[in-house]
Image 1 (cartoon, rainbow, N blue to C red):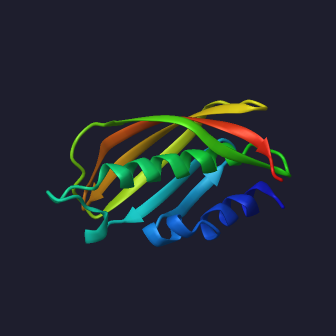
Image 2 (cartoon, one colour; image 1 turned 180 degrees about the vertical axis):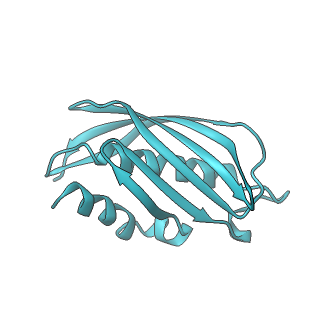
Amino acid sequence: MSNSEEIRRIFAAAPFIRDLGLQLVAHGDGRCETRLALAERHLQQDGVVHAGVQATVADHTAGSAAATLIGGGQMVLTVEFKINLLRGARGDSLLCKAAVLKPGSRLSVVESEVYCERPGKAELVSKALVSLAIVDKR
């Protein structure tokens, strides 16, 4: 399976990601972009995008960016991540851009930036640093 096929599989085969509605926009060596059309179910009690939604988007997009650089028979697993929520996210969609900062044979470090989009504006709302283990599929 090619890395491109693996990235598409990562989105199609993950029940939680499908249920959330996260869509693959673009990917290439060491990078990935995703978009989430926002709905009421993605919000917390005061009408801003839930921190858990932003964390999931940042983490899954980071994992997909790291997966573009792994070999056949391998997969990535998040071992740690930190997210800074910079401002309340209110808009129509989230756009996440992830880039591998340090690829490795056993551990990769990826940065994700999450933007909230509304007509004519995209605002950085959170930033995550994600460490991913590269492990053999079993």
